[in-house]
Length: 458
Ligand code: SAH
Ligand code: SF4
Ligand code: F3S
Image (tube, rainbow, N blue to C red):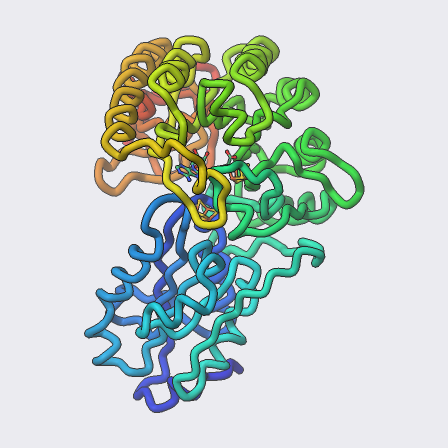
């Protein structure tokens, strides 16, 4: 039997519906899945619309500007709903919750509770405690507590995220994550093998291993990230393994060799955030590598794993970034063949060192640099994508796209591929011959295992 919080008892039908809105990275997406699962175990139901919900949870992100403002304005939209349904509870979880703590309750009167990044599993108890309009902030971080949690996911798809570590100890001078996610902790290797095998039993074909810096993964038994990949490749029945995010300073040859050795299972796509192409700026960012060391590492990867694909993150307008320093980020695009990039304007974050650096770059210059960088990369990406025309890519079919009626999946290189298929293709890995390329979205035709065109199609 499930316990009904007393603030819901005067509701006519006692149904308990929840709605979660998620911002930020894959880790937040995964945390939202976990919260949804915990709520369902406690007798709540996912709400078809936000208006029908009795609980609204905002899983927030603080990586760039105005995160508190975004949370406040979303909650502002629920003002009338809360007037109509006084028992409606609104909570904020995620990185803004951890950053602002109980302050958030004072800043936003409509808010009922704040759930820190280490307090996700306390959600059901917090809801029970929300009696008589009392407000709650559960934000305690426990840096010494071992990280032993099983993946919780209601209906896993073909491809699913699995956390291997949480937190970050790198303290890049621009980044708020070490302050919102706390110290780095890794899950034990043996537990990850069990966890992934049980996801396989539930139909999962691909896992993306998540961590802020997967390369510094260290199991309590001593195994490093390369050993983890090797063990997952050998000891689980998962068909595909991806991971994100890699830190260039910890990406070593042994890891690339492991990836190459188990290439049938470990995908040949590496997101390797560089942040800047200028050594002086990289030093100020506290990234732990120079432009030259980064380029050397990228070349080592491409040489040892021919055909592998790189992508990156870049920040423009970091404090002290001169025109020449920015030019170094532009010219890096000529040196490393990134097939995709994610680029951002630097945003000063609370608690970070870079916040108090001299020579902050004006917004207007940041915007100009961002657009210049993106335009340059668009041309490069278009040319790089051309090599896939007429090529066969191995695609794991994920689902039917409702809009186009086409089926979609991802190639080993993480390209989104659309093709005409049928429902029984879902979950299979099939060769697709690419007819049309559009930077990261490709269109093609399916072939059978012997690379012959399939006859019957519907
Ligand atoms: N752990 C990952 C990054 C997580 S944050 C890594 O080290 O690569 C994702 C991206 O957001 C970063 O790679 C960076 O490019 C961007 N980012 C982080 N803080 C930022 C800030 N203060 N301003 C602008 N972009 C930022
Ligand atoms: Fe932030 Fe740097 Fe840690 Fe990535 S490695 S989460 S950018 S501090
Ligand atoms: Fe955002 Fe926190 Fe992820 S700041 S990017 S939700 S780790």
